[in-house]
Image (cartoon, rainbow, N blue to C red):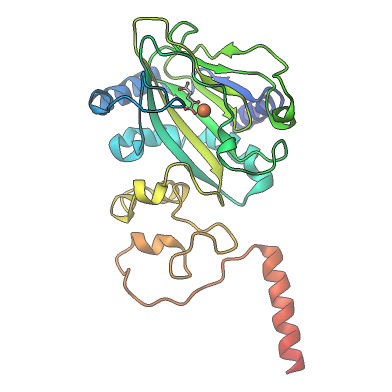
Length: 291
Ligand SMILES: O=C(O)CCC(=O)C(=O)O
Ligand SMILES: [Fe+2]
């Protein structure tokens, strides 16, 4: 990692910890985002409007973006963003996982979405753990009048226990190429679209590696698709074990499903944390000494 990258990682992670969100203005070239938006034009046109009050009936959403538009990998595997997310989530996991990729169009006339904290989807203790870091990538300009994501600064962490947010909300105004990062505990929601244009954006979310992800990554990208992904991307979507032994396939790393020799009988192999290895080694050694 370069010094510049390290400094940017520290700066964004510090802002996420203090404010609950952070905007990276020039995360990718606008042309790359325009190309991705063009790739998604057909699914946006073909996808019906959502149903239900949370998604909102004047919005459209669809997932599986790595399969629909391979260009999404540049967003999912963005070096700076991955470094920041790993830093934020490291206290609670061994490795992170992709939680979701979802395209969202907020159509003219859409009301504001219910303010919410994304990590409330997991019923853990409130105010203690960060489960998730979300990134919103605008595909069109985000403005206060067209449905830019609304963020409540400093509403994260233990503030999730407070009856009211401490600060007034802000509209995350940004241009394509920028990325809005916020914590799973930060209060937010899609804004109302009072303009006559569709607001389009992508959500790329990363979670603790041992959680049940919001979007079922193994079904979104079954082995026949995932075997064409670079190994780091396959690992991020869950073709990797989280120690100890979580997410195994036949007692081994699920990457065996991405190779050619899938049917061969396998030995289950421990995949443990160093502290567990030490504990077990000492136990086995004592056992052997007394037998
Ligand atoms: O589209 C947005 O601006 C935010 C959407 C959101 O927060 C959600 O659906 O969980
Ligand atoms: Fe949300």
